[in-house]
Image (tube, rainbow, N blue to C red; front, side, top):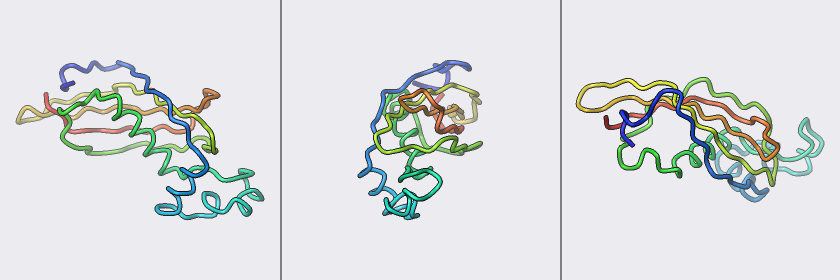
Length: 141
């Protein structure tokens, strides 16, 4: 979809994705190797009573789920900005996540391009919000 096909307030719901313990440990082992993500024994004695997903992984899953809806298609040029990132609740192994995407703003620019800003709100299978963040992209008008 092009910028002019989106409307402010428009809402989309993505499919779900189950996050496994292996997913959490593999991602964290490469990108965020803190104990609460990779060391089950130490994490079980910590605040969360077990390993949890890295916030960066939860953010990445949220974007993945949105992109896989293919609303931007080939009209998106690049991401431009992320704001108001909030890691609200931990994501545990076997949580199933889905993202609600709301169009917040659209700003036409020059050269037949514009900026589209959406709010990504990600929930687990218990309908508890685990993540929220604004994503802006450069997109064709």
